Image (cartoon, rainbow, N blue to C red):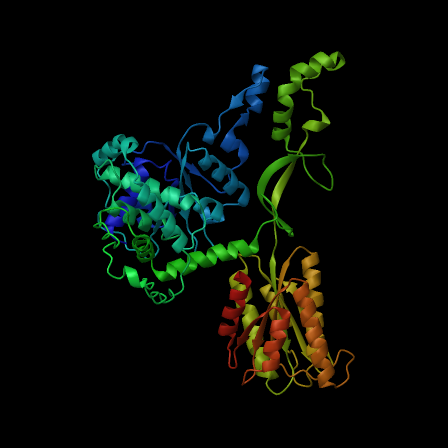
Amino acid sequence: MEEGFLRSALAVLAVDPVAVGGLWLRARAGPYRQRLLESLTLLPLPLPLQRLSPQIGDEALYGGLDAVGSLQAGRPVLRRGMLDRPSLLVLTMAERCPPALAARLAQTLDQHHHGLLALDEAAEAGEGLPATLSDRLGLFLDLDGERAPDVLPLPDPQTVLAARALLPSVRLPHDGVIEVVRACAELAILSPRAPILTLAVARALAALDGRSAVETADLRQAAALALSHRAAPMAEAAEDPPDAPPPEMPPGDQGSDDRPADPPPETDLPLAADMLVEAARTALPDSLLRDLAEGRASRAAKGSSGSGAERAGNRRGRPLPSRKGRPRDGSRIDLIATLRAAAPWQAMRRRDAPHRAGQVLLVDTGDLHIRRAKVMSDRVLIFAVDASGSAAIARLAEAKGAVELLLARAYSRRDHVALLTFRGRKADLLLPPTRSLVQTKNRLRGVPGGGATPLADGLRLALDTAGLARARGMTPTIALLTDGKGNIALDGTPDRALCEAEANQLAATIRRAGLSALVIDLGLRPQPRLADLAARMGARYVVLPRADAGRLAQVLGASLEA
C-alpha cells in the first residue's frame, strides 16, 4: 500500500469521521495494526475513542436502570450507556458482529453523531464485516500481507486542524456530483450511500489541501478511497458500437453555414466518469475485489431469520440478553434483570397494595426475566466408505487414517466423526458420532473388506445417521467415498439398475433434507454416474484416485469449514 494512500485515509478520518461514517480496516491482529491503532491517539480526532466487543449488550450501549443504586436511593437511578455521548467507536473482531448489534450500530451511524472504526480480521472468503455496516463506512484499508513501514505516514496535526476549520466552506461542483453518481452506476454500486460518502471524502481532501472547492484530483482520490472496495469484479467491457453515420442533409442545405459550434475547451470539471471508475478499479488488487464480492454473495445467500436469530444446537455458548418470561423447562431467572424491571414501580405498588407495604421489594410476575445463552451446534462428519472390491483394504486404511487425523485436529472445535462401511449385502455403522480418539482406534481395528457394493444401503444408513445427529442438535455432513459401481439393491438382491435408481432417489432425499454432503470419487478414472449422483445430492464432487490419509483429511476438514 502506498504511503500517500494510507496518510490520506487517516487524515480524512481525523478531519470528519462522522461525515465519512468511519473506516473499515481489514487486517489481522499484529504489530502493524497495533502501531496504526496507537497512532490514532496522536491525531487530533474530534471524537474520543471507545472500544466495543461483538458481544456487547443493549444495557452497555444504551444504558438503563441501575438496580443496586435504585434500591439504595429509593428512587430510579439511571446509568449512562456508551452511545450517550458522541465518539469514534472501535469495533474489535468486526467479522463476528451479530446481526442485532450490526443493526443497532447502523442506526447509530445514521444519526450522524458517531463514527465507526471496524477491525475486520476475516481469514476466508465469505467472512467479513456485515453489509449493514460496510455500506455506511466511507473509507477502506487492507493491511493483510503488507509489511509495516519503519515510520508510519501520519498526517500533520496542524494540517488536520486547519482542514477541519475550512471544511464547512468547501463547495462541491454540480458537475462533479453527477460524475460521481455515474461512476457508481458504472461500477455496479447500487447503494445510494456510496456517492454521498465519496463526496464527503472529496470535501475533506480538498480541505486538507487548503482549497475551498473540490477539484478533479480530489474526486479521483476519493473514488480510490471510497469506491474501490464496493465495486464488484467487472466483466470485460463490451466493445463500443460503431459510430452511427451522420444524417444526410437535404440538397438545399449542403452549403449552409449553420454548423454546430465547436465544443468548449476542457476545464477541470466536469470530470469524465470513466476516470473515477479507473481510479476505483486500480486502488485494490483484483483478488481482494473477488474476495469481497464472494463475501457479500455468501452472506446474502445465508440470509437471516431476523435480528438476533440463533440456530438450534446441542450446547450453550455465550450469554444473550435476558427476556421476560416465566421459568420453565429448566430455565433460570435472571435476578439482576428482574430487580431492574421491578425497581421503578415500587412506590406505585406500595400505594396500590397497602397490605404488601411490609415487604422489602415488591416483584410481580411481569418483572420476571429468564436467562438465555447462545445455542451452539457441534459438527459431525459422517464417513460412508465403500469397503467392497479388491481396493477395499487400501481404501479402508486411508479412511481410518483420515478419521484419526481429523479427530486429533478437531478436538478443540468439538467436531465429531462417524464411520460406516458398505460391502456384501448391507451397510454397517462401525463408529457412531464420537470425539474419543481411543475409542475410534479400537473400533477401527480389523474392519473387513471385499465383496459386492450395496451403494444404496450405504446412502440409507448415512441419511439415518445424519437424521439422528440432527435430532441431537448437531450439524451433520456426509462424506461418501466410493468408486460408484453399486450393484446390490436395498432388498439385498443383485440388481445394478435398481441399485442405481434407489441411490438416485436417496440422493434426492438427502438434498431435500438440506444436509451438507461431499462425494469423493476413488476410482482410477472419474465416473460420470458418480458425478451425476453428487449433483442429485447437491454435494461437492471431488476426484481423488490415489488419495492418502493426509489428503483425505485435508479435503474433508475443508468441507466442515464450508
